[in-house]
Length: 285
Image (cartoon, rainbow, N blue to C red; front, side):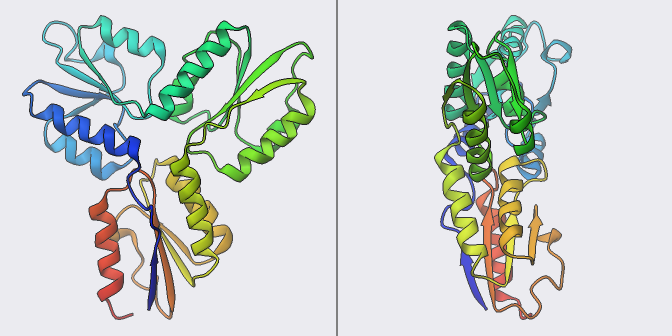
C-alpha cells in the first residue's frame, strides 16, 4: 500500500505555543486553569486535566477565584475583551496563550470600530474564536458563515465595512463570500486573516485527496480546521474517514485500498498521527 502523509499535518505554530505554555506553567506549582479548552483536542485536554489543570468557562463562578486564585491561561482561540477583564479582576495571574494570528484580528476589529466601521466576520458564529473576535469591538458586528448569507447581506450605502475571517475558515468559501460582498457593498475593506497554516493544510489535503483511494483525517471532534480538512477531502475522495484517534478507524476502512492519504488538523498531537501511520504501515489489510 502506498501511503502519503501531508507534510504539514499536526500542530501549527499557535497551537504548539499554547500547549507548551500550559505544560511550562505546571512546573510553577500554582493552581492552573485554562479559560475554555486550551485547544480543540480532547486527548490533549484530558492529559492536562490528569495533571491537575482545570477548564473554566466562567471565571466569576470559578472555585479558584479570589485570594490565591492561581494562574488562568487564556485559550489559543482567544477570549472576549470583557472576559479577559473579568478574569484579571478576579485576581488571577493571567497567561495569554491566544494564537498571535488571532490576536492580530482582535486589534484589527478594535481599530475598525474606533474608526467608525462596521465589522463583518466570515466564520462560524458558534466557534470560540469568532465569539472572541466579536467581543473586541463596540461596532455593529455581522457574522457570515454561508455563501447564501453573503447574497442576502445588505447595509447602508454610507456604511464602511471592515471584513476579517476566522483563521481556520475554508479559503475557497471565503473567496466566494468576498466576491459576492464586493459586488453588493460599496465601502468594504477586506483583510484576509485566514492563517497561512490553514491555507497550506487545505491545499495539501485537496491535492492528496484527488490522488488516493482513501483519506484519513485526524482531528478533534470540536476542531474547526480539522472539520474543514475533512470536508475538502470528502469532496475529492469519497472514501474519507474523520477520526480523533486510531480507535475510531473502522476495521475494514482500508480493505482493498492501494493508496491512502493521511492528514491531521492543527490541534492534533504528533503521537496520535504516528500511531495511525504506524498502524497503516504494519497492518495487512
